[in-house]
Length: 369
Image (cartoon, rainbow, N blue to C red; front, side, top):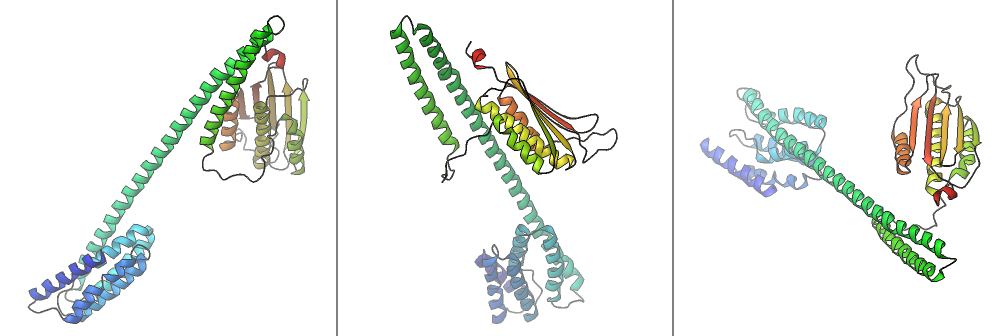
């Protein structure tokens, strides 16, 4: 680019001087060639390259008595600045550079100056406009590439979800049936029970191996952990969350209804995250003076959790209850949906906010029927 622009400018000056009935001086020819060298830095330092090209161009116009010439090196330098700088910086550069180019041309400001100024401005705006068109195409191409990447990720997630569903639907169902058959035949036909247990063991190993392979794909690229992961929290850890909320200044009440029993790990984790996020939203939106109440209800087929606050720290205008939205509530809904439960999250007419979820959690006796 530097060699081509310098050679083009040299040819242009030589032809212009011949048209004027003279010849291009050796010094002017050297300046015309050297003016292309700053373009070598146009990608890393575009403004500095433009300044150097501009200085050499003014010097060339002052050193030759022939017709003024807006060199290709200047067009490339303006284009490079417009490609890499913000519009405000580009506009400031144009306002400063165009008069300098014209001031270096012979006859400024009369008799040629105003026409030269308009011509230089037109060429400069052409270079800047071309750069803006290219920038817009690049932005559209990048947005298209991001869209394709997001679509590929979504398709991969759906594929993994289907494979996980196949593993659970096939292997786990087979394991459950084999376990039931072994229990039914354990007393009167031990051999059949033994074969069922062998099949159950093989199916379990295969399911674990396939799930481990999928998890390895999901965790590809992660850095290895130096420490063992901490156990996932559950419903038994709600006392800690409530205590932290009280220490943070939010008066929080915690009650448990129904006979307490162990919950499946995923259900317990969902309950914990719902309470954690809801109390965080209470401190964030309702203020420190708000009061919160957490209620955990154990039923024979499900478990319910409710978190509500009175919004005492941030009363909304009359008739316009405050609404809370964002990634927190979205995350709650996704967690609850994965467990096959329901979630309610809405402002209360009397003020405050309420989050309530019900999750399937049958007792062991119900789950083995």
